[in-house]
Image: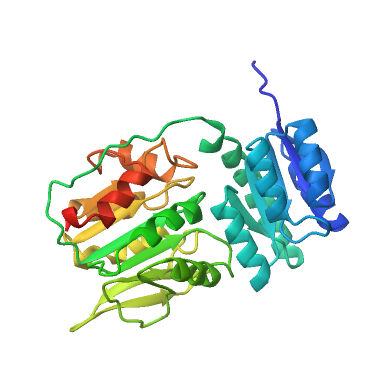
Length: 343
């Protein structure tokens, strides 16, 4: 039997308690091990240079050198998959989002209490494995092709779903949308509770369209992007004279992913066929069943291609199910949405 080498992880955090917690979680997995720890960003840069780990967990706020600065230095010298470990503060959330925009693969929240520790123990190994197999470790040149849909632009609604790598993808797509974008856009991004509000604010500052965190009973309007709040599910409902957001409790769906892309996509069925559904980078297959139903109803499905995905999981299952003509690079998706030729 072939024994694969274990993932080598560098753990960076200024809290000795959090460092030990992360070490225990990682070393408990059969396929990974902690090769070193660091207590600040400068030590992290040095150890990353010396040890060349497969993956790094990086605290955000640290003395001497922050996690954001350390990430930039590591990415400039030797790009390495990095998972940010963030406290749920406004400052921590904003710095974490900057890190995700600058190349970090994903984020986990620092645990609060026993339940938070259990959740971290469940999710961290999965995120480390996904980070290790991410697109960051493969050198590829995205195509420069332009995509032209076989149908005219007459979408009444655009829905997007993403997970690992999604914040960086959204950072490229949403600021490229023209101010007169002719449909509302609703986004379900897998991210810990507390990050979707700051994400919407950052994107709003960088975009011509308005970007908001979705709220219950909020009316949908063209030229506005609605970020589904984490920790609950977001659906769309058609009323007599308007379309509106519904924020649903976690128990609405058995999916552990909140917001669930499937919940969002299923709710868009009353708008089909005038729906454009876009599945971006992410691990797993959330969005597949909803995409199937939208496809049956005549909606157009677009999936991000492997060449630009951080993790080619969610888009891959959509492509393999035959729900889209072909996968599109992130640049093609941006051009397709932003170009007036397509409208």
